[in-house]
Image (cartoon, rainbow, N blue to C red; front, side, top):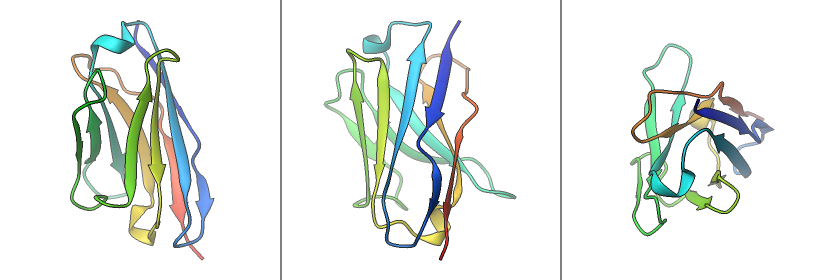
Amino acid sequence: QVQLVESGGGLVQPGGSLRLTCVASGFTFSEHALRWYRQAPGKEREFVARISYGGEEIHYGDSVKGRFIISRDNAKSTLYLQMNSLKPEDTALYLCKVDGYPSWGQGTQVTVSS
């Protein structure tokens, strides 16, 4: 059974940084691409970033390009999202996703506010 546990969210001021973590289990981590999404209240779920199984191929949503960095540690079955230069519009519930499986974690809340 696929399990995804996100953490690292919190309240941060505009311009600040946070590092999100997604610990995965229940599948062969090193054989699957992984994604981050986010969902703000009243809005559709938005693609944030994707990283290939080996980490060589990375894509970002337009709204986070140049500010966020996705990475992974296959030895630890862990996905990361380094978020820099945070803006109030980055406020959302952040969720990780495995390509090929329908499962979602519970997400971690990020709030950017002064």
